[in-house]
Structures are given as structure tokens and as C-alpha cells.
Length: 239
Image 1: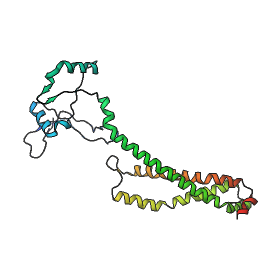
Image 2 (image 1 turned 90 degrees about the vertical axis):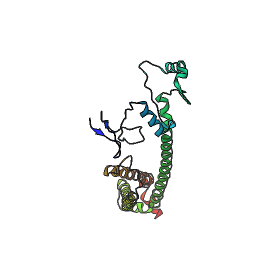
Image 3 (image 1 turned 45 degrees about the vertical axis):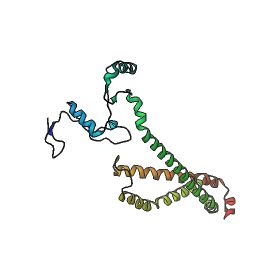
């Protein structure tokens, strides 16, 4: 029932008939406020077409229940010239189900490219981190043999190496936080579709931390397991 105007210079006002919640056009965009305007006269339609350009307008037709696509094609053929006005004519009617893949193709292709890039980077990071800690653990066989000769159990050796690897990861957190704040300062993350909240920070940062911790654990576990099974005298030979 409220009266609204298009702008401060408008001379006419419209009556609000109903209020709708924000609408999400597809799963790749966020919900946004929108409104529907009822065009009551031919002049309103002509003005809207003139402003938007005909090639950029979507005209949706709601078919009655039980009306199939084959029936629509037959209807268009029977109408003939009655669906033509000057140089405008109805060529075909396409179901929305068939238009959806075409409309979302660019978003889906972009998402696939990003997933492939992230996957490639994760593989490189995985082999880099696992290989680094694998060689580092292998290099310390003599030290582990000495600890074993002094009474350290196999479980203690594995736990010592794992905790040491996690501490090395923890020491990088201050540098990572500086990098993250720098990214936020220059507004590089996508904050339009999803605001950068503390919840988003803890999910992404925590997920990355656990992923890297898992890689470090894998890089330590295999060589540490073999070293722990070695005879202390044999392990001391490397020292």
C-alpha cells in the first residue's frame, strides 16, 4: 500500500502491492533484492523495450497445465503471421530447462578451471612437503638410533618427530597472518558473494592448517616407522 517513486525527479508514483524476499538467480551468485513491475499499458511495454533494447529482453510465456512442448510448436505454426509485427516475429519457444545449461556454462567452466588449478597446486604442495619431511627424517636416522639406544621407545620416537614437524608448521603462522591481512587490506578475496567473517577465516585457515599438518604427518610417518623398527646399533652406524 505504500507509494513509491522511481527517483527524486519522478512526477508519478506507484503502489507497492507486495514485498518479496531476496532472490538468488542461480547457485553461483548471492541473493539480491529485486522487484517486479506490472506494465499495464502498451506504452509501458514499448518504453521498456526501447530502453532495454529488444535483443537483451527475455519474454517468458507460462503454458497452461498439460500443455506440452509439441503442442506449443503446433500452436506457433497455426498462428502464422498473427505473431509478426513489422520486422519482429516469433521464431521459437525454448523451455527453461534447456536454457539453464547454456546460461550457467560460463560459470561452470570457470569453476572447473579453478578446481583444476587448485588441484594441481595441491599436488605440488603435497609432494613438496612430504618429500621435504621424508628426506629430513631419513637424514636423522643416526640421531634416532642414539635416542633409541638411550631408552626411547618406538612410540616416543614417532611422537617426537610428529610434534617437531607440527611445531615447524606453527612457527609459520605469524608470517601467514601477515600475508592474510595484506590480502584483506587490498581487498583481494571475494567478499561480494560471501563476507569475510571470523567464521570464514577459521574455516579456511583451519582447513589449510589441518591439510598441511596431514601432509607433514605423512612425510614423517613412513620413514619414522622404518627407523623405529631398526636395530639401535644399526641406526647408530649412520651417526
